[in-house]
Image 1: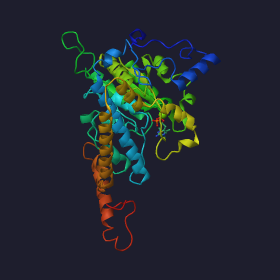
Image 2 (image 1 turned 90 degrees about the vertical axis):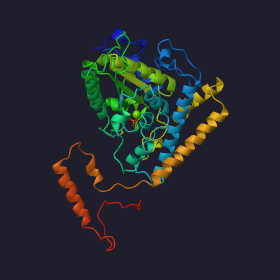
Image 3 (image 1 turned 135 degrees about the horizontal axis):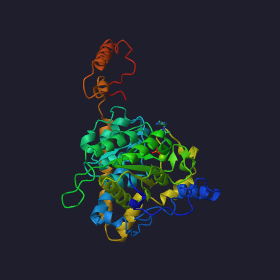
Image 4 (image 1 turned 45 degrees about the vertical axis):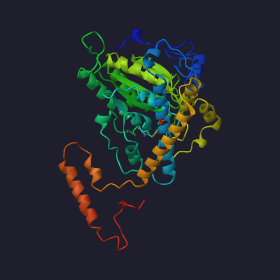
Length: 423
Ligand SMILES: Cc1ncc(C[n+]2csc(CCOP(=O)(O)OP(=O)(O)O)c2C)c(N)n1
Ligand SMILES: [Mg+2]
C-alpha cells in the first residue's frame, strides 16, 4: 500500500471536513466553498494573468519546458479548441449527430495527455478529444463517432488511447484492470541497473468527470487500485457540472480529498493551467511507474459550453459564472505569459491561428465527404475472433437487405438504412 508519508503534496488546511467523523456546520460550509472555488490547496504554476509561480515540488517536472515547448503546448490547445468549435458548428448544420464540447478543458487535456509516455495507456470517457489528439489519434476518427458512422476505429494499443466510454465511470474499472495487469507483468518499480527508475516502466491514466465520482464503478476502482498498488492515475476533470448537477451537490468536500479514504494521494491542480497539469500528471505517473500508485488528480476546470449539443445550460446556470471563468481561460494565460516574456511574437500567434483555420477546414471537408459505412461493418469489430452466431446474424441481415433490391424504384426502402449521399 502507498503510505501517507509518501505523499508529496502538503495536507489540506484545518478548515475542511475531510477527516472529521462528524463535520461541524462550519467545516461543511468550508468544504463546499473549497469545492466550488478551487480553495487554498490548488496547485498552480501559471496564474490566469500569465504569471509563473515557483513550486519547489513541481518545478522539476517541467524543467525541460522552455519557450519553444510552451509554444507547442499553446499550439496544441489552440488547434484542439478550433477543432472542437468546428465540430460543434458541424453538429448544428446536421453533419454530426451530436457533439460533446471540450471548450475550457484544453489545458487539463493537453497538459495531462502530453505527460504520458507512448507506452502508457489512457482510458477516456467521451469528452477527451484533446487527450486523443495528444496521443496521436486522427481527429477525423473522433468525428466519425459523432457522425455515427464509426465506432472509434483507431488502434488503441498503437496510440495508447482506449475507445471512448459513454457509460459514466465504467472506464475506471477497465483502466484499473489494465493497470493491475501492468503490475502483474512486472512493468512497474524497475531500475536501470544503476539505481535509476527504468525508462520502460509503464502507467495508466483514466479520465472521468466530477459527476462520475458519485458512481459506484469509480469507488470500486479506487479500492482495487489501492489494494493492488496499481499504477493508475485517476484524472478527474472537475468541470463543475454533471449536466445540470453542480459539483457541490455531489460532495461535501473537495473531490481530491476523497483519495485519503482509500489510502492514496490526492491532489487538486488548476485544470486551466497547462503547465500545472503537465507537472502534476508527470509527478503522478512517476509515482505510479515507481510502484507507489495509485494517485488521484482533481483538475479544477470549467465546462464553458453545453454538456453536449443536446443540452441548454442557460436553463440551469447563470451567465455570470461563465463570465468569471472566461477570465481564467487556459489558452489566454499562456498567450499572455509568452508575450510578456518574449517567448513568442505576433507572427507566431498569427501562424498558429492560420494553422488552426486550415485544420478546421480539413476536418470540415472530411466530415462532409465521409463515406457511410457498409451494413456489415457493425458486425465486424464485435469480437477479435470470428463468432458463428454473429456471422449468422450478419448473413441474415444482409439477406434481409437484399430483399429490398429495386425497392427504391418501387417507392419503399429498408428501414434504418442510410444510403450514401442521403444525409
Ligand atoms: C451509468 C450512466 N448513468 C447516466 C448517464 C447519463 N449521463 C451522461 S453524461 C452524465 C453526467 C456526467 O458528468 P461528469 O461525470 O461530471 O462528466 P462531464 O460530462 O461533466 O465531463 C450523465 C449522468 C450515463 N451516460 N451513464
Ligand atoms: Mg462534470
